[in-house]
Image (tube, rainbow, N blue to C red; front, side):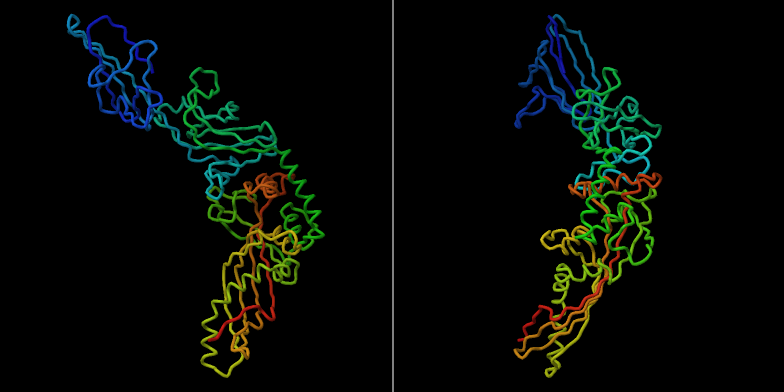
Length: 463
């Protein structure tokens, strides 16, 4: 900000500031120990009390925005001596504009929106183009302060420092975008500002503070490429990883399943916003409130899925983690029945997380579950345990029988990278009204399993 005074008259000059929106500094890079020249409610006189500022055509004062609102900076010239009685006053009104983005959402699926707290980058919308015209269509909701300048605010998509599209202002105060990604996958940043030169686009120097919202859009060519790669992976996996290949082919709406479900699907009513295992609210039809139905397919204990889960090392570790909770009951029983050598008891557990995501490729069966489920939940687990008192007076778990149910939602997270990112693109591109966008529909698995372990490696030291 320039303050130029060219008077050949005796005078003193003051600056005053009202309103908390700004502060005025004498330097554009003040040291931490410096104080502002002006804050709200203050008046200073040039040359008085160690306060001074330049008034030549090369001098500047610097404005710092503090908060949204309006401040008024007033300059006053008061003549003295022979100029006594001459008073000149001028004011500059400065308004700090704030644009708050509350949500960015897909037009045909308003549940696919940002912020999304289930993502690592919550303020990032992942969106596929629509199949009919290959445009990514989304809207931005927000608030402008002061409201009476809303029509002068532009919200635009930026590719680096280049404005590529200006949002279309809507009657409800939103901005609509119809974006054709410049490459198969493209990430843009939203920026707002005022089109000061009137050329219809924003330059970087016309933009306000970054709002930190991003849009990653990908087109139909990318959807088709990822779907083809996933199909090839499923074909390669089928002979070695039948469970993983089954789930992937089911996701791709293919019928040649190595391990088909044991019965028909049931429909489970869910809310995508509260369904924590669903990262991106896509891959199914959801109402604006988040309600939708997800198909849950069963696999019985004789299926490849059921037997592979039953024989997994992860299930054995889950059982081993549950047995210590029976220690007191076992010791109490043998203490009250000193001649007994066998004690049978049971325990029922629910909603226990099970992690196949870190299993190694060196074990084909274990890695099959890695591909199929990653992280899942054993929603029901009943253990029937036979404890045997040994001659050494130690107590061993003899036979441990278990019956249980594993449940998992088959969906993907773009931010996980690799195959998960490929599949997330297909999931985000699924469209119930497009025949060639049928791949990518999420579903749930319900795996029944049963197993008997003899002997089970668990010892209680009976003192």
